[in-house]
Image (cartoon, rainbow, N blue to C red; front, side):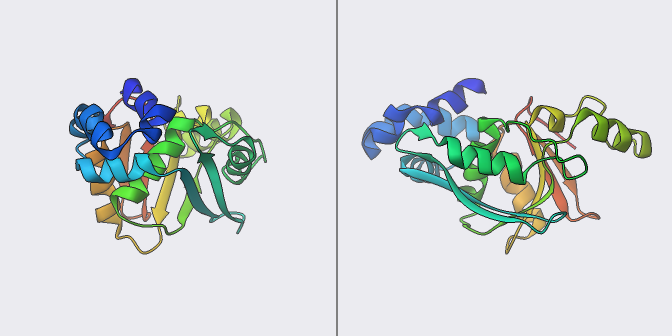
Length: 192
């Protein structure tokens, strides 16, 4: 699936016409199970923005992290900061593929609302502590690599968000209805 993310990231996909994109992207759309029009709409945007609310720190962020075919260092740094380990204040570079996955997810559910962050980056120390307390925390969690996030989306039913994340087939998807969040990551495709 790395090739899918590379195609989405490439500037020429953004710059090409809708007809060219649909021709190039038909295989990508099929593999992501996104309607071609939805994928074209997402990839043809000249800017990609995300809105976050950190449920632990009460911080809010609305930022453009990608524009005109390139990632924006300032936007990426702002995202890294709000997704930091809130227990230790450790900041880690978040995987750009994860940000693109969030962008595609919000496009899939046709929302520009705010992602509520339950857990973004986790330091190894925090992850070890959480793993000792709960068998539900992976000892080698993708959170420690900046490749995972636990979220809910304002105005979007959790079941709908979960279904949309599964349909992308872009990594792992976990469903935690009793805690009111889903987990998404850009590791191998799997579900729980």
